View 1 (cartoon, chains in turn green, brown):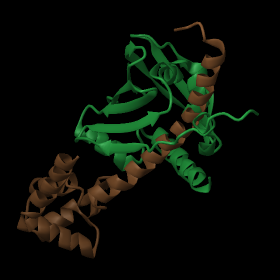
View 2: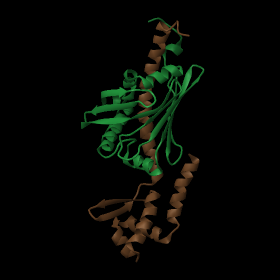
View 3: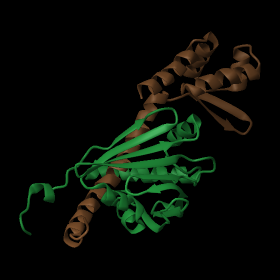
View 4: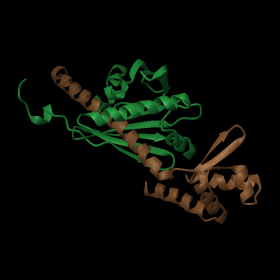
Length: 175
Length: 120
């Protein structure tokens, strides 16, 4: 390997922040060391999304990952996890797809109305600030998601995602 | 966030502003109890007690669980503590995802440099 500038070899790790902005809103922010069109394509091309959405440490893997990423298109992600016999499905519809700056989708796997997720990509000097905003239909919906330890889904899916989060947490602790 | 926290605290203080509800918390501190038992202890109608328990539940001070026809009340984890723990779990999930995404972005940047020279 040839020696280049350090900035090219060692990726910078930025902090991830999560904040409950209001009774109905949850906001995740993170900066990436790359231009917006690259980060955007990693969120919108299924073959790329698959490579980061389920980090190895969480133990889950994709059974299928279908996403028709255009306004009005739908997505369906199916995960399997060793601790669960039934695969977990997450699905919804893209409300807005504006490359490379804005992406809005619904989360329809729950029995009651799910959150609407808006992701914005803002490029600044070769870096991209990603802000992911979840708007829940009511305070109760977000409170319930928190109380059950999940972020989406319901019933059995809650438990499955719980397990996923627990094993993920353990995995993060190890590395 | 500050505003939101204040509204959670407001709910807690509002819940605690009533003597009956403070009494219910004291009672639940000794033992879990059904709404029927609480209503009898405080000489109230079931409907009246349900309302008080509802206010305490909203503030995260009490949780209830219905088994068969009986709704049992117990002291809840303070809403904010539970929420902070959950938010940290959620943050870790996304931090792990984004760590993978970092690697992918590096790879795509390199690819673009090699292949995409003609693109603007």
